[in-house]
Length: 605
Image (cartoon, rainbow, N blue to C red; front, top):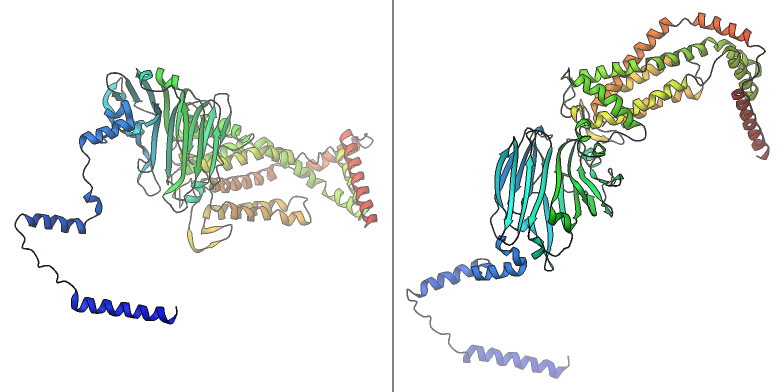
């Protein structure tokens, strides 16, 4: 800015100051308000202090009707009504339904509580929703925004709740049938005259549900919750159960059922025919500790099925195998029973034994103890064979030690000599391992059964308040990596009993060197792994260890090792000139090849 511009601005400000000081007009005198003016003053005063939305004029009934007609077309007559709720119940369920859309609003399981002792709300109306979208002259009409008329009646002990939407030209009737017992709610749609108001476009059924937290261990609940489905062609699949990321899938085939599976409970819809296709997703909101996962399914109902009559069933209940298997094909997949052969063991061995004992006893700690006894009796022949094999190996220990001293560091010759001795006395060196391997499927199947058994949920035993989750005798003020912030006593007892059993076995076995030390590492690892697992599982393993320990002591007293040694010496004399078996020949060849490979490797180095 140059000097002239600066002088000009100063003169302008000076002139303005002179004008407003000596020449500005006088303000008008205040008017005297009449009584008619006072309400106006009050209204203005209220309007200036209130929200500006109060100034918007109310929409007239005719204008609202016009807007509804534009939005809903022939369905406008059912829009704008107030929501009314109806409740139906049986021995297991309390189901609340809304006249808006004639849809399920809330489901409560009567015989279950959440971890705080409150009623278990399986489907929460404040967190969930069901919508059915139809196509009316190019407009997507959500039936959940329309008011249906309801009627309630009881037919042969079955409660029937009907929701009707009609204007005389067309009618939609939704029916819900709830039997006196059970977890299933039958559902059907009947209609007339829809072709006159709907385009023949497939119907969208949308079900969004935020799964309420029902268990104490939130992280465990999130890792045992997902969307699952079964197709009409027999294929079953699911979204990643242990994932806490956003997961989704597009289902392009005929869908028989889809479910929101939790650890102990499931919400599902099962079509009598099939859904044409669908889309599912799930995600975790870590900021909300009252919710396990947010899940959604969007299923397509063929228009012809909707117009001519569509029927399905809802399932809201517990993940109990004997209940699930009766609902629909492969519906028992909503209960995690393991992989490979493990589900077979659980279905046909563990669960039948458990259910048999459950019919006589109500204390689940005692039931678990008796399950141990049953399993050990079933495995007794294999355990006996394993102990006999170990007894034979112990009887031959002096001869095996002589072979080691004779050949010194030549491991190949020592092993060949040992194999020859085994053949002569009639010992199969792997016969002791086979019975143990055959027991492994049972041990692993229990690893899946106990943590997922709804029967153990909120059942206490000794110091454990809930056998379906971990027991805690001490809550630590800090978190130990890979262990947790609590101390499980059953896990400690299981670990100590395993170490005791391992030590006892090491006194009578031929295991030497590093393997003798490494065998103690497994119990220590399980101390960390199982600290947050179901106390029913760790209690089972503890009792099983103690029973096995007693069984071992009994077998030691029964087995006469001197007699076994004498028998083996007789076998040795008989088989002194016996030719090598094919197995022994192949084994020796493999050992030679291994030795030569090691020698060549050393030469190269």
